[in-house]
Length: 415
Picture 1 (tube, one colour):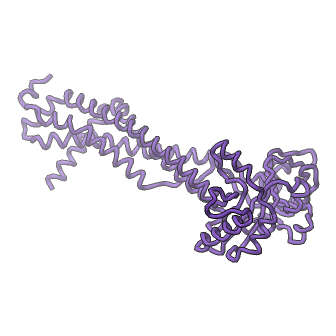
Picture 2: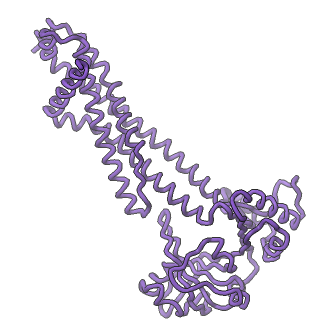
């Protein structure tokens, strides 16, 4: 009971001292606030980015992988030259997989023209992704439509000039018309007319790049418009996640046989990848951001701790006579030590709490601008206040110990 009263009285004295020196208190808090706010902001932003990236690159689920001439991520010019020497992945490869792969549930093909010009009347949209796909890709990619329909197998085989467009096409070419309003209208892609039969649901953007600036057309129509001499991408879907590795092994064996490769060859002659390659690349990049942020925050907190220690030493000097009076009327060393230690912890804990609020507020504002979710992390808030309080203990211990050791007679003589 006496211990509770001791800490309560020390806390009240700490608040009184902080209120009595408002400007000095604010300047002392700045280092702690900046350090904690930096940690909270970056942790919150990266958690939101993690979820957005995971949802984006996992849209095909954990059962889909691709077979292509080149990997999706190429890190050097030498690798690019080496991959370009490989044989193209062709429709014949896709047909061979469809015949021989017993564990493949769905197989689709896709070819991309990433910088196409699309027109409607006198309106045009540049750098549109025109993608020629087989009908099965709508199921593999889990494409949902806001209006209209996909083409039929008959329309795809006959290379009908029909298309499914993304939400950006509506905004760029039709003045933001509703999906239902654009159905039946005709676009011109590479000078060829294509009727809009479907509009995909909006996907949004990531890292400032829109995922809705696309037009899907039947692969056979794509080949006739853009030519069929480029390498395609084959997408394979296993029945479930448990069968994914077995399906990948079967596909790898079939593709190696078609290229005359064995398990002893260093290069398979093709790339077999899941969307995890993007997640791994992203996680490697953000892990460095975490380390840099922790370093910056640590420097801010160390500087803040030094400032707190200096201010507490000044406070001890200013209040030497007060300490002498308290000791003269019976205060023990433990009482004086507790008073100044609680004052230091209170100061830094307040700075930590303000830093947490500022960090979450900054993260929320950035998330609104960048367009991804804000994931409030309770542990980061607790960690922020906890670390700042620990800094208060570390930085206040020496001034508190110095105050506790003051001789009451010498302290009473101080002016």
